[in-house]
Structure formats: structure tokens, C-alpha cells
Length: 494
Length: 89
Image 1: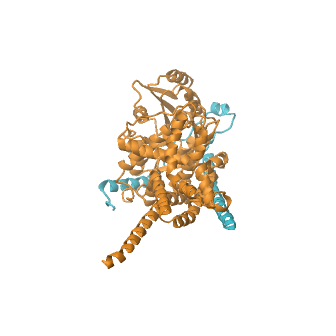
Image 2: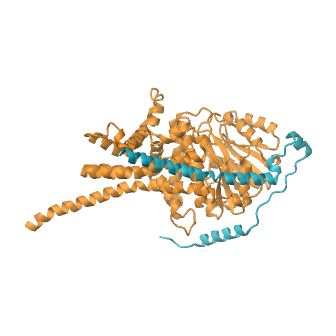
Image 3: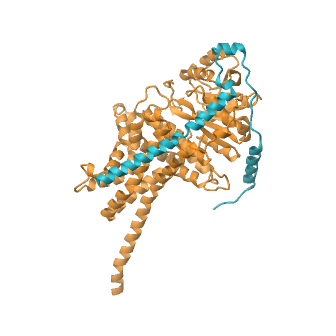
């Protein structure tokens, strides 16, 4: 009996030790996305020596441009005009606009364009529309593939505007027979860039110009940009001549199919394309939710692929798997880190402070490294959006990180600050419901004016995490796969 | 964990090998008539001149070397941040 009583404190001590170890593991799990992001950004400079330029050739194939359009009258004329003005042999370029049963002025606009560019601009109309972009593209693909003229196919969005030299900078990669598809650098192109579009501008800079260079180096591309994907005819035929209609991320499926069929996908950073992006949080949410749900669907669709190099050396590689899951599981990592820190604080506040203090410089340094590297890949855009780059995690997180990095500079650092400490540890997860509330706020009459302030406070990054959470929930509940089209107004200018 | 190489994996590997052995794709030379050239103010477009296309590619290849400068700046900013923090702590 005495032995049992003396042993009891040891059991409690062991239990506490195990709990501390589990909580520390939770905090460590949160470091995975940080390390994955750093690894990816360390690959970017390698693109200076490991790129595809030495394997290109002066190849100028017959290119059919496929433009899916549903009620795009506001932007079609500018887009087609720019396409016709591309610095590319005119007789080797034809534009096919697939009108998905538009109810606006699209048919009239196309009739005028057809008259201006006879034989070079073709209007294909679907009488029954509303099935989504992939169905619309497949309608056009059937028409284009039925004719032997096309040697390469450019799939784009109705609102995007190509720089004059962009197409020939893409086609040069197709000279290499191992390349099946090429994608370009899409930039946010609003003339009147404000808060949200500036955040998107930085997001595109990081996700397109920076991240895709790293993917070029790693030899595996996650996604051909939906608005700028050039395929060789051979590649289209090899993947079945049709675009996937079973998921919400048809462009990612096409990218995976191309690579799994043995062809390479190359990112061309000097082929520049401007796109109009959502100007409101709700519109952005709908667009990104579609992308996030698509990624969840693809994770399941290609479950045989992850971390299996035998299936595909690039897509099945360790690097690509970690990169893919680091983004997909970011909300889980944030939740576990928050639970870990709050749990440690409740068990041993000194230990929690030590862990947080010791660990905080790594994500801060990684964040600073990543945004500097991102801005350097396109300084012209980067210098316009550097504030949004710094505030990407939100003003609150920025203040928390600054306070943790330079505790002597913040007034709330000393004294009894248990309330502040708990808030800091919890904010990683609280910012996600805050993002949901921000979306609701924007939809109210009085909240619309406050939404931009809320955007800066909560940050663009947490909104993306909240959208990923929403995607999990919608996929789990089997919500309908609706194609919420982003409203385009023709704000883009060169 | 690995399920090993399947028939489709081997087929893909064969495709990769056969594609790598193929000659590069070429397009027929662009014919630019005197009228076309006159319409362009007598300036030969880049796409009509294979040497200009090659120069453009080489310029883009060399431009990628700026990434090393970006890396140097990024490392310098992180070192500066660490130094300032160390001095203030």
C-alpha cells in the first residue's frame, strides 16, 4: 500500500511528461509548412542554372487559341484585339471563342470580331450551357482536334491579356519533344489595384513567378495556370483529347495527366499574362473555394501517387509530396501549433514562453526570406505590393511576430500579460473563424466599408486557410460542385 | 510503402525514353512578303528571324541569373534582422 502511494506521484509525473512531449510534437508539426516553404524558396535561385532554355528552339507552330466564354462581352473585344496583335506569325494563329450559351452581348461582340478578322476568329456556340468551364473547353476541343491544322493549343480565359511576345516565348519550349505543355506567368493586372487586388498581386507573385520556378527545378509542376496553358497536339491526344469534368480543378488534372503520360510541363517566367482578379472578399472566396475543393478532390483522386517515386519521379517525389500537403494541411498545422502552445502554457507557462521565444525567429526569418526572394523575382510588381507582402499574415499576426522577435520594443511585453500571451498562442487558430466572419461582414450593408480594414487586420493568408477549411467541410458534406464564375469588368490594362 | 513498378509505370517510362530519342520539332520557315514587311515599316519582326529568336531566348536565360542577386539580398535581410535582434536583446 505504501509502495503504491509513493509511486503515484511518479505516474502523474510520467503522464505530465508524455503530455508535454505530445504538445511539443504539436508545435513541431506546425514547423513543417515553414520548412517546406523555405525548402521551396531555396530552390528558386537554382532556376538560374537549371532551366529549360538550352533545350528550346525557334518553333512557331500553328496555334489554336481556345477561349471559354460565358457572358464575357465586357472583356472579349480587348482580349481578342490583344491576341490578334500578338507578335506571332498571323497565319499561324486562330482564335476559337466557345460561347457557353451566353445571355449577354457576347454573340453580337463575336459577330463583329468575326467580321474584323475573317477566318482567324471563330465563334463556337453551345446552345445548352452552365455545365462549367471543362465542358465548354471540351466543346471547343472537339472542333479544333477535328481539323489537322492545329499543332498546338493555347487554353486561356476571356479576361486575360497576353504580352505581345508571350506566345512565341511559350512555343519555343515545345520544340523539345519531351515537353507536352507550357504555362506562363500570370499577374494580377487591375489598373486600379487596391487592398485586396494588391494582396492577390503578391499572392500571384509568390505562387506563380516564385513557386513555379522552384517546380521547374524540381521537375514536377503542380498546376498549369488555367488562363495560360499551351499544349502540343500530341500531348492533348495522349491525355485523351478531353479535359476532366469530374473535379473542380480541371487544369490541375490536365497537368497531372500530362506528366503521368510521360511528358514534361514547363513554366516560362518571361511569358507574361495579365488577369483580372476578384475585387471583393466574397467573390475571392468563391473562386478560391473552387480551387481548394479541386485540390482536395485531386489529393483523393491521385492517392496512389503521393510519395511514390516509382509512379512518377517528380510528382511522386518526397519534395513534391511535402510541398503539396504543406499547403493542404496548413489549417491543421496552425490548429495543432495553437493547441500545443496553449496546452504548454497551461501546464508550464515558462516552458511555453521558452518554446515560443526560441521557435519564433525561425518562422519570422523564413517569412522575411520568402518575401524578399518573392519581391526580387519581379521587382516591378514586388515594389508595388511590398506592404501587402509584410501584412500577408495580417496586422495582428505581424504585431505578434514583431513583439515576439523584438520583445523589448513592445509595451505589452513586460508585467503580468497572461491574457495577451494566451491571445498570441490562440490567434493562429482564432484568425480562421475571424476570416469567416469577415466574409459575412462584407455582405452586410454597413460592413462593406469595414471589410478592407478587417482584411488588413486578419490578413490574406488566414483567409486562404479559412477557405481551405471550408473546402474540407464542403467536400465532407458532399456539397454541390457549382461553378461560381468570377465577374469580369475589363479592369485589366497593360 | 512503394507498390513497385506496374505495367503502366513501365509503359510511361518507355514513352519518356522514346520521346527523348525523337528529333526536335521544327516549323516551316516564315514567308514574309514585301507588302507584309512594308506594312511593318520595314522592320523585320522577331518571329521572322531565327537569329533574333535565339538571341531573345539567350537574353531570357541570362536574365534568370538575377535570381542569385535576389538570393543574396534575401540572405542579407535575414542576417540584418538577426543582427539587430541580437544587438537589442
